[in-house]
Length: 122
Image 1 (cartoon, one colour):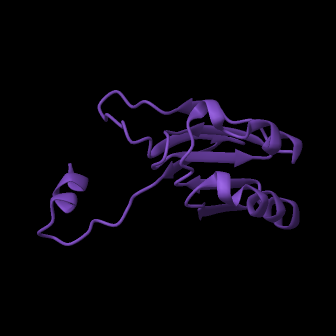
Image 2 (cartoon, rainbow, N blue to C red):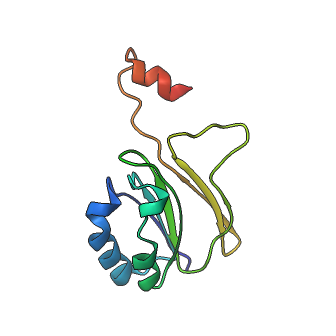
């Protein structure tokens, strides 16, 4: 059975030991992470590779960011969508074992009358 899990880590830097421990115990085929809050240059690729996994990611400092961790290497990785500008690095699409995996971070819309609510609808 092909197993996919998702986890809003709210800072991979802080939660990396927990993520690695969980990967070792549960051994999912794919783990989609949201709110990694890391730039691409600071992403812990080596640690994840040492755990027996591959990783693709799209991140930024302090906010947002997504990563897809998988037992087999992902192909057709897309982080930039032609008709969708994603400066907040919330979307990552990849193909893993002939399955398209779309990893999205979609935050709470806030109160209907707040500026954040209308901004997030755009």
